[in-house]
Length: 265
Image (cartoon, rainbow, N blue to C red):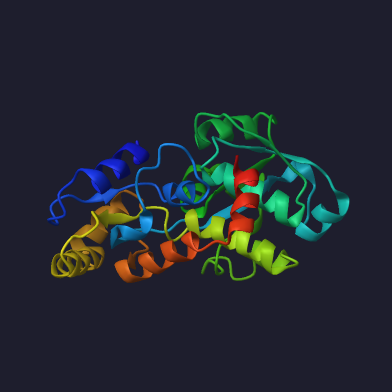
């Protein structure tokens, strides 16, 4: 659906500021690794902003007996993680951390969603999870409160305010290549996961009007009250920051693109 929408807005929609695209940020990395069906250049969209950013965490079952990342790496104990599909943070993040850090993960992909992963977790079918904290804290509340799900690592570009001491995956990277691969995937599923964009060649003055309106909305008391009522986190970024994040993803070097393609296939 995101791919069809992105292709349409890029190639068909008029650049008059009256058509806005909201697509999944993984389409940017799909362009980088050359997935079929991409008929757009993400660098040419006009970026408005994001209403929220995901912060991915890795959790393991208490029954696995893993105390921390160091002991997990040392023991080489394989933990089965439940995944949904390539292109989702449930799959891409464990895959890149397995490849770069050597985390002993066995990804079991193909669940219909994280609700099904939770059922599999509670039945002992899988013992690990990669999910956004924003989703986990509401949909996995029972497992968190009981201690059955132990948070062990955050796959983010910077520490989440609620977890200043939870280890960061980037800090375990032993070289620049590993850091670049981890940060690229974290950027895709974090600050660029829900981009709002306009077609290429939209007049700059219209882009600026919509950017301002978007950020004004993100601060509007009524809007924030509705979001709170719906238990939705609002953690916005403006169009300029979003555009810069997309540029960072798109400038991945050819050698690393080939490695990432293999990791995410």
